[in-house]
Length: 454
Image (cartoon, rainbow, N blue to C red; front, side, top):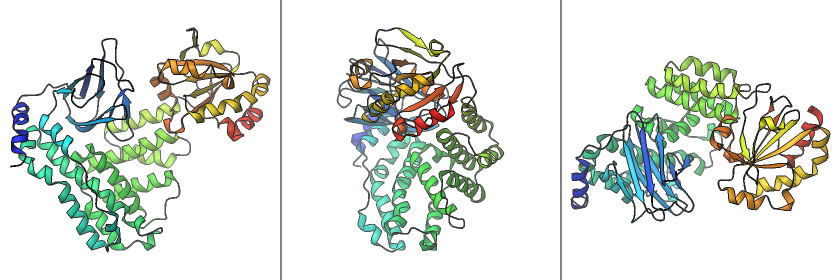
């Protein structure tokens, strides 16, 4: 009864049919003022995309390939709001641009679910739980899951009217969120070698795994299965030393031990795509062979081949991807403006590690001149005015400074990794790719490569 009055109004609203948007999920946003730091939408803890607003202060994000999804709205670093959407939903958010809480209005969402998510807070067991023997540990962990499910249980009937699927997913989300505690149990006990892990732990881990294609929409489920398969695949195999060995072992384990083909293919596709996206296609013959053999789903296979082919596109000897950028006066440049000389593209932003590399680049000016290399510094700083301010610094007056336009497409084409902050790309005088990831100048390997290879 404690949720009845609280949700009564939202139940009445949710009986109306929410707008549908084909086979994807559409989030549209209108603001009175542009958010000072920016408004982001994340589908995972790593995938936060800033909304780009037009002159009418309207922005959109389309999410494909998701049956259901939990989304988090980020107003700068200070505010978060979690919402839930299913395929075909069109959610419209309006707020003043300053504060989400108190000024925001959502339409096309599922109000009881949005309200539930605003109230639900995860409660993890204390670290003392790790001192318990495994059977008692598991009992306490299940009790923690029950505690975290109390609000859901009390509101389940109301929430089902908004979406039966949400209730199913939310029960699983809570279970697999707390499942991270189970995954940490060996580390808390100092088990560093597989022979030191109790056999009962592997059994417990296996029993926690449910095969359900609906759960594939849950980040918590995906994370749990990925890490659990890493543990379980090493049970009867030599410990994987490299990320490549680890992904191979996971794929082989799930192929042998899982029953639902849709779940198996999803994880093979995801793991293979993630590895290739991050590491490229050098010496991955076994992974490539297994992935192409196992992926009988045409859509999943197409996604994998798209990622693979995107690396083929930027192999040495292929035509370099062009760019469009402007200098501080507004003059436009592209790659053709630097033909007949080697071009070293430096992708950077206004953070200390990037700026620190300029002192090493400056010392290499004689080498650049000797080897006929033009250093082109492509800034991906979000705000143009911040870039203009930084390049006035006398310590970075080397090469040609340009502000990169159409950033997303260019960076995706060269597989720029935000975690490494910067990237050096070498292009030949006739516009062909020589290397897409030169070592950083401060390492000394940068100078050695240019001296020996050009």
